[in-house]
Image (cartoon, rainbow, N blue to C red; front, side):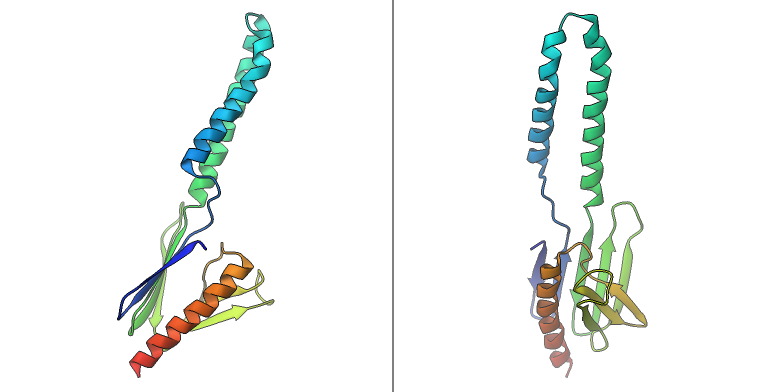
Length: 164
């Protein structure tokens, strides 16, 4: 699961992030292998004028692939942090190329909602309170949102009982 709980006695923090299937070392291996495989056909034209005609296209291919993978990695660097304590619930979303978004509410009035089929995606997960409804874990799979809903509902109920 791409999320982590950090519990203490009086508060809990949840960090959520998208899956990242390509690590930095995997990126290096992929780019190195691709460069090597693209250079194989160039061996047959070494020492000819054709090499100079093909070289810019191979370089452009490698450059565009590098750019696309780096851009994808940056786009996936979303981090959502949910802080729950007896007094308030706060959700902060760090976006890669946009302003930071935040939402907060009194813990007693915060409500968690799972929309199995009526949201934009199955098992659409939202937090409601303070006059707003915000999405939580948009990048998680259906099963992960369902599991997160159950865990988060338990923690919110736990904090509400502490309030009294």
